[in-house]
Length: 443
Ligand code: 5AD
Ligand code: SF4
Image (cartoon, rainbow, N blue to C red):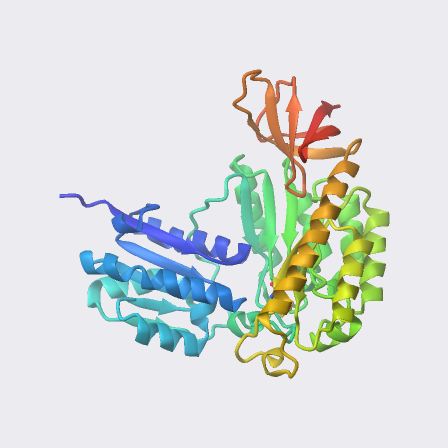
């Protein structure tokens, strides 16, 4: 008899979800389960879902449906669906009705009860559905980390911004910040192990960290305190909202060698009219001022952004302004999405919805433009000195090549050096071949 039990977690969506799957895995590990990639072998399958765009939801519903025959062969299999998609009441009802083989349904608010749900289901075999909103942070959640030398650390949950296209505030609730000491303790416990060399702070809008706390902590102060920890590591964070990216944050990034020089600053559109309809609370001019400040204070900074094309009423002229902004900023990389109406959000009911073909055309134009720019930006990196992490020795004939990674995640091949993996080195970029960067280590 084989009494080892296996789990399989399917994760969709953003880094927040990737990290939350580490928490789900923590509960399963605590109960003796071991990870498997093969759903046919699993005793528990968890779908950690995303609902940011309709395409994500459709894909997930298809993947949940595909579990039906597995459950038929293995009636003891436990199937759980959680995360942003199931936090929506209508969707939780739909999953309940459409997939009778799903045993546990819960949302983002009840993640810390996953262990209880599993235990309850294992004893009662009664279906569980739990999507009530919680407004406190449970600090006692187990974790099984799976992101190599990167440790994800939540600093806050939820979002107060209500951009008119976005479903996140509805499924993740209002902003709640963790206590600074809890965050610092978690970061320290990771760094102490020697295994984590990058710490990535997570929040939907990290720049408003601390606004809901009694103390006078800010995001900049939090980063400064973390950097005081006496270890060799890089501090990253995501995501920032331009309206809250204050000078003290830019200065802190500029002045602190431990903070990554890569900033993801989603702008969404280059048209003030569309930005207003999106409720973004800044203008293109204001955004460009921030970008100028960043470029002036942080030389060689890597800038990335998110864009939505085909927002209701977006004209060719609005779209051209977006392209113009991309040309002006010269991003190192962008994510461009076709607008997807999300139920219950204001934009979903706006007049002037754009059809799929047009959105598709615009997104392809934007991505093509960005590809040209990022190729050019890569070329311009020649001569730059970047502080990089040594990821691994390459398995090549010469046996003296290492792959190192810049703050922004670009890989550089470094030759003729005896480097130690997972240490930081300064690398001068010397050339580029087929869009692959090469460099040499300098003191
Ligand atoms: N449709 C398309 N893209 C969206 N995003 C958020 N909501 C939508 C939507 N309804 C994009 C934004 C955001 C990124 C995480 O996802 O660009 O920055
Ligand atoms: Fe969504 Fe806007 Fe909040 Fe980002 S800031 S999660 S886009 S509502």
